[in-house]
Length: 270
Image (tube, rainbow, N blue to C red):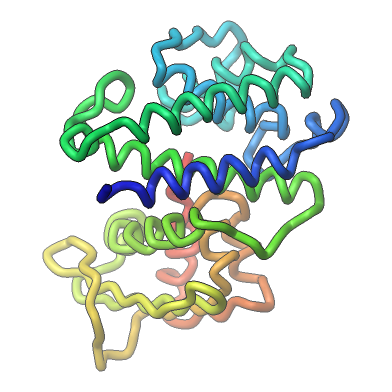
């Protein structure tokens, strides 16, 4: 089936989360992650809650003050799910995670091509289902790395989700450059990513829009060279602009205000 790769990436990522947490105790589940405001327990409950809501469970209301890291209505819903499950033990958290993810994978495996292409319902109404589920791969894979970082056990086996994540953030660079960074008409951005899945990406501004270009002989207005891991962490908001710019693996050149604007604008997940 055309979308088996999405199912495989979800299953691989969720399996790695379960493996990372097998046998862990309450103290480890309470370790804070790079995801603002959330512990490992919260991160796993978020993934579980998303799948349960997709299966028909109601979205709870947030009964506590809205934290400063919550930026929008979707974030408020996510926080409500997490807050409603914080009393669950580590064993309960993992049991529910296994159940919810197993149900989702089984459900996805029964879909035909038309269902994947059809518009989703509920919180993601209007978007094709394959885009919605691909977003779940991105979210889950980043949370897998959050868990590993919180456990102080980063790993090089990034799994099937890594390519989806890096490709997704590459695809966001035209918007980041032209809209969020406010680059002027005709300006060229070159981003060189180093490491596994490394690549060079070029974006120009035309008619106020960022356009990916295959090549250009022009001198870039800004050129960013950095590690793949630093790139996705900045795009996902796991490190701030200063951490990206000051890293030994980063070389940022070009017009000063545009360079700083790019680094600030790269946080696209909230």
